[in-house]
Image 1 (cartoon, one colour):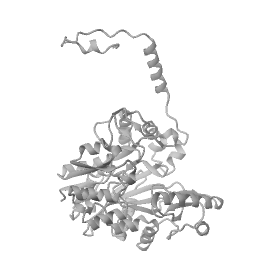
Image 2 (image 1 turned 120 degrees about the horizontal axis):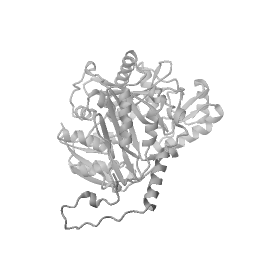
Image 3 (image 1 turned 135 degrees about the vertical axis):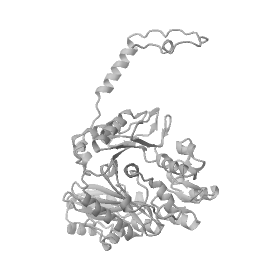
Image 4 (image 1 turned 120 degrees about the vertical axis):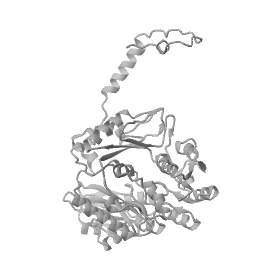
Length: 494
């Protein structure tokens, strides 16, 4: 096993990885940008290295600087977390060339699966069902128009080289296609360095179901059950749960087999996620393979009891999987809510700034993977995720109730967060009924506004208190060591 690793990331995921490393007795080197100098992940690491300026290209996306930090600190391996360089095949390849273990799949696997059209070709050749659509990338609108006619509208434009909603457009009529293709290509080249796009048949109101996989270097592959990730904004997940409310034992077996087949088809090693779209008629289709640890991995850990980061480290060190498929069982129901610095009233627009005060929820079945603290300045340069709030209940109903209570206890002052929105979402009839499709937010919360009554009442109470005439604080002799705290609190009443 490794003695020291470097975590090429920041925030809550850096702390999450660090936690398992410290339990395993592995020393951790953190990297940081100037704006993250006082970040929690830096303070908790065994060593830390400043990479440079706040812009990602000067720090967390700078391969040369990260490799230099790894060399100078004598680490044996690098964990990329998610985001930044986690799915960059050039970074994984550079680690391989430098003799540093990349805690993830081989660079060749990342490269092939990172191209969505190549991934589709591999799945088709290995019998994994895929959504009808193109199997080669294209950037010419004329060619794409011909393909759209063959597929049939509506179609979905997707970037061949990326994900996360970038370069993605839904097109319902031929008149919309040209402009949407140009826009998607432009966004794709800015995000991924390639303007290649392709078309898929757009499924109306599908569910987004994914299977966590683990694969070692000895040919052993298992899945850790499914996650329901249909509730999304801007094609990015915001609430996840396991098990899925739509899952049957038979469907779980079929989708699990397809996930393992996808891993075999790509020569996958380490932890990854095979994503599917589940149509309303029960048909499911391969979507993509995420070649990294997922943001939502904690809910799988909660129901299975498997530490996925530990498995990543063991696999990367050459160990065989100790789990068999028959041994993997889910117990209870887990839900994750992503807490971002963003404003749901303004289209979930980022809301960077200083966290004046923060109080995390706690209690049985509650886990909060958090990367910030009171006084932290949430920077504008990076993804605005603050934490992943996770709960486990014996049943879905208990998990929902527990999550609502945890959200009510979660206090973050100074910035906007989606906490009020998430509470309303979890309390909605559609969510309670398990009707969680990918259009959930558009269909149920497109014109959402927060409840103002509490805020108005608080404002009125403050004005009355200010203008109602305060009593003077009772003077207390500083030398009186026995002064009651009630004498020092000022204006209070029972």
